[in-house]
Image 1 (cartoon, rainbow, N blue to C red):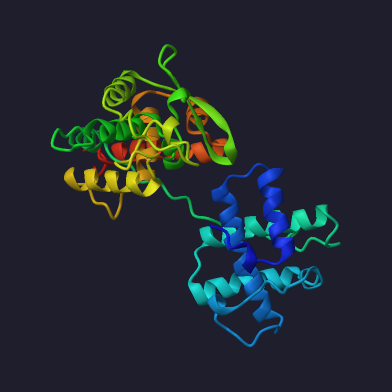
Image 2 (image 1 turned 90 degrees about the vertical axis):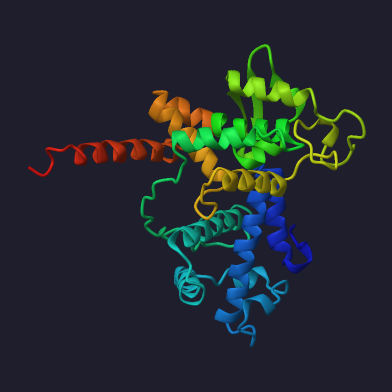
Length: 326
């Protein structure tokens, strides 16, 4: 939750603009708030406006736009160096901070709060390409097997959750946000709200339809809470009969991973999204553009990581040829 009273007015104005005009999600705005709060606290140290050196103890709601207008490219470099030296900040983390700073200073220029944008020539750290971790086909089958456990009083619900993750590649936030009305059983379709509040359609295969239908027969109908989470409309409910939370879903998947003998230090809910995408690309011959649309990726470059996985397997196959070392 954003602590608005800790922010200077211009930062809260920016966050409001991101929500109302740019239609950014609450999670994205929270990330902006965290990144920019860290930056503003740093400025208090960097510009000798505070004797405190512990970022967690610095108050920054007294900063004004006059101070922000003095920020130059060198100050931004100093901030990134500070994060690296004091917090061992990784390139991906610094890249996200830079993205937040760019959006923030673009907004300040747009509103004529400052004359010069210091992020104009700010470069992004080079990121090494990392192949996504994903379950093998056999591990995926094992996970589905343990999720369909009759000893679990929430068997149908948990199995439906795991089935949707592994077949559709949806995000955690998308799954917990599903309402019953979002499902069109006749057309085998499901509408989800992804990043940036963008709606997209996911097509449901037989396994998904079967799992959802079986869960719907046992989904509680009485005593479901009518609250600000629209629990009465939600597909997946917790034992308290309200919309299931992200943490509960994470606990469900972690438990199933352990039962399947899969390392929970390496695999998580998000890795099931990678797994679904990889299996569809490798075994289903799915076109990369179709996969992009299914996953809700804004850029095709994000989706192309799954083609790298396939190419790596091709390389390994060639290297394993018994004639390779002759």
